[in-house]
Image 1 (spheres, rainbow, N blue to C red):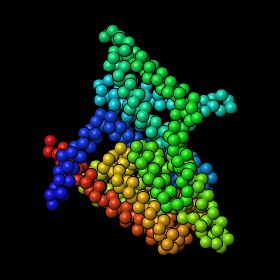
Image 2: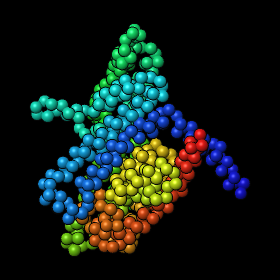
Image 3: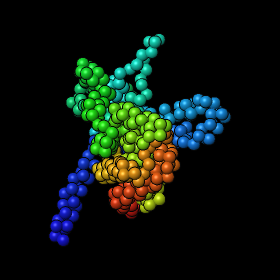
Image 4: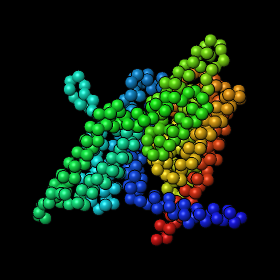
Length: 432
């Protein structure tokens, strides 16, 4: 009893205040508020992505016959214009809020940060000599670089402003002109710093700043094989990267996807030849049995947000996230709850998918659940349906139900704690 009391005392007097202090720090607040700016665009893009990739062959055939074979590509123009500018919106939002906390002209700082972010990206040139920015570098693939630029380059900009290394204008000049000239020297030095960093990186085998993360992850990941430990390490890395705002699935898949797709092809060939399926860990293993609801296995969490929330904020969020979550799109949760940089969600966000990896792998190894048979089931296919299609057996759907239940239990206490805190905060605000 005394030991339990000591643990509770440590939590309430040391650990919780420590994390509260961290979460209230200006950089963390700017990160949170800046990422929130991307939420509306993420939700809009998610909706149109689902419409374009709705996993029903009859629906897809009807749409193609009605609107032409390229209807999905045309519809996803909206997705490209919203979902794929996440990094660009994030760097702008983070820089704006951080500069505002320093009481520095936030708009000028934001413009400089956006320019610095673009400066980190190698531009492409077509045959006519026209330059363009690869869209993937502006979305979640470039999110980690966007976060670093939004935080550190803005800090550098603010430091220069506080040193008074600015051009002073007479008070009679309009404020917009004063701010523009005041940002010239800080902006030039900020861009010069990023330019030097870029030149330094380009002189290394990494060749470009966006390649830095891939360069350091590629060699370790390539050594992982089609095993349970390898699957656990790969999935654990996906989750950890997402916690820090890096698109974990894209980063890991860049190295591991060829291995998983090869394993899928081997299963398809074995099925066609009438042989036993050789591989458990395939692309469908992760898409359909681990990432139910998206990275972090957040379908159970989405269901709780939608149907068990007591706070007004989470009830509203639940209405927005439940639809995309059913189709395994969970950016609205990752950035809306949020999951990114949220210490309260680190444990379940990692534990749930690792549990799915373990239970599914062992169930397939022991023959309780059919292995994935090499059918390329779209990743947007809702759970239960996708499990049956991927394995050709009802056991696949049953396995998914079991995993969803386990995921929900893992998230439950963490979610309830956050929900209760929101309720108390809303009540306190109403009282004031």
